[in-house]
Image (cartoon, rainbow, N blue to C red):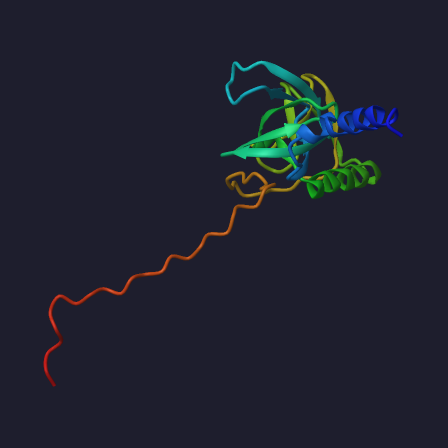
Length: 180
């Protein structure tokens, strides 16, 4: 028994030191919205590029600062991205449903694109653009809808902590009330 004790202790020590214990917990899951999304090491425009993701890749959200999210990719790379460039699971499902409906819909006509045209995930210029039609390319027009201009609201992946109501202190009267 005593000759097996060092081997048992070594095995226990090695399993306790696994790299999985260092990982930050996943707070939420998201999908990349644009055609390509750069994941940066820090929250600076010139920070080192950690990874480049393609549209629709699933990522884990592990932190947040203002509108930026700290993410972990499927390869294990960790970095920061702009939250306005991420899609929720329901957004991805809606895009897939739209693609299936568009594939079955009859063409209303053909259109020519004179300059690069971005296809967005929502009817807003700030929404993630997941496809670009090249200049002089033709596209089938499936439908036409008009939408009012509204500000783009990025999805919230991590709910904000509840705000505690503050108690108002009763004001002390400087003068006593008048006698009855």
